[in-house]
Image 1 (spheres, helix red, strand yellow):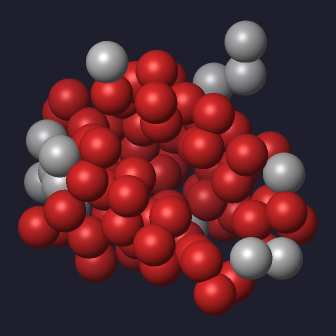
Image 2 (cartoon, helix red, strand yellow; image 1 turned 180 degrees about the vertical axis):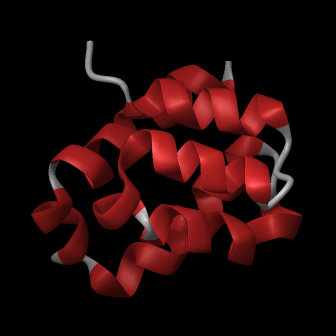
Length: 86
């Protein structure tokens, strides 16, 4: 259920970053909503730290960082599915 709701959001942020950055004032709410759907609202800072590294370490690096931050594996998997292009 969560995966279906988050996939389009993740894809838009990752693959159309200009549109995401055009809405900077909404970024915290979007990221907070993603964390809520993933069930990691209490680890919001760790989640955003991992996402912030996307340009430097790529998708696999972000997922590795999420695991290093000890985020639940279910959140890592769901977020990882959202990063994949179909």
